[in-house]
Length: 159
Image (cartoon, rainbow, N blue to C red):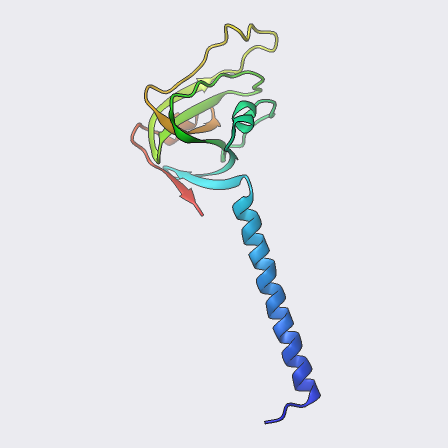
């Protein structure tokens, strides 16, 4: 069966269009996966999380940011189990910290206030979990109470 020129061009353009769409969506998926933004579910609340995956991101944390929306958080991911020490240096708002082992919330600290701007950072209080963890989720202050978060609650990634 012989195709005329119009059918050949139509087939070619259709094939190119489909290829373009597949490449476009493939690039979007790759960008989303490599992005530092993800989502997690805690109780019935979806949080858009900024990931902190290395020592410089761990040190920076949320320092210097103006605020977190009710559905925003920062998730610190460690390569091993540890008892990390957090403090409120250069913070502009209060936080709740969820200490997580794998997917289970094993501890939390609530309503942690920022250090005063001219405060003594050497004497600043440090916060740590009672047990080993490999993840930490910082959420706006009051979240633990608002969602009735308990030890043993599970945090779920949303892909």
